[in-house]
Image (cartoon, rainbow, N blue to C red; front, side):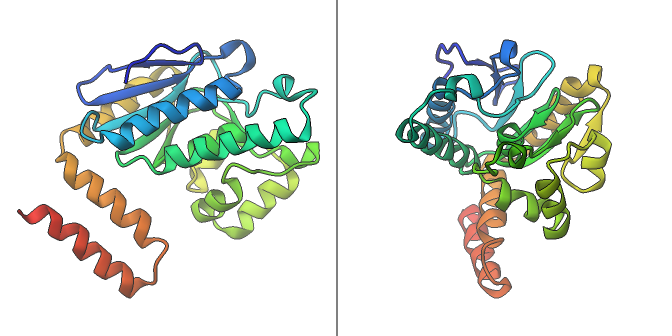
Amino acid sequence: MLFRSDTLLLDSPREGLLRVRLNRPEVANAMSTQMGHDIIAVFAGLEAEPERYRCVMLTGVGSRFCGGADLKERDGMTDEQFNTQHYLFERMMRAIYDCPVPVLACLNGPAVAGGLELALACDFIVASDRARCGFTEVSRGIMPGGGGTQHLPRAIGVRKAKELMFTGDLISADEAKGLGLYNHVFPDDQVVEKTLAMIDRILANAPISIRQVKKSIEFGAQMDTRTGLFFEVEAYSRLVA
C-alpha cells in the first residue's frame, strides 16, 4: 500500500491510519494524469483490503490543498485526450467516494474547483482557517465535472450551491463552516494536530461497526426512508455474531 509515487506522499502516523498527501506543491497540488492513476491505485487497494487501514486522511503538501486540474498539462490536448483524462478523474473521485473506511479531508489551504471536489468525495472536511474554497469553472467556460454539482447541493442545499457555482465566488473557511460544508475550522498551525486528535477518536472504535455505519448512511441516503430502515437492519445484523 505504501508504494512510491511522485505525486503522492503516503505514511501512517497512527496505527490503522493511512495519510495520503497530494505532493505537487509547485503547482498548488494540481491534479495531473499521473496523480489520477496514483489515487485510484491507493483507494483500489483500500477497497480490496479494507482491514489494512481503519481511516484515511487526505491532505496536501505545502500551503494549498489542491487548485484543481493541471491546466498546463491540458493545454494542447486533443478532445480525445481531454476526455480520456477526464474519465480518469471521474474514476478517481468515485474511488475516494466508494472507499469502505472513513476518509477525512484535512484542508491545509485553499481547495478550488476539482480540489474541492476531491474534498467533497470524502466523508467530511476539517480545514485550516486559510482554506478558502469554491468552484470557478464557469469563468473558464466549463463546469464542475467531478461530482461537484451532486455533492455540494447535498452538503449545503440546492439554492446556496447554485449561487456559489453560478458566481464562481470563493468563500472563506468560516463561511464554508457556517454553510455546513466544513465540519471544523482550526488555526492553520493546529489543523493537522486537531485532525489527528479527531482521527484518534475514530480509531478507538470498532472498525467493522464504522464501516457498516458508513455503508448504511451512504446507501440509505439514496433510498426512501422505509427502504433505508430495512437496509440499516441488514447492516446491523451483520455485526451481531
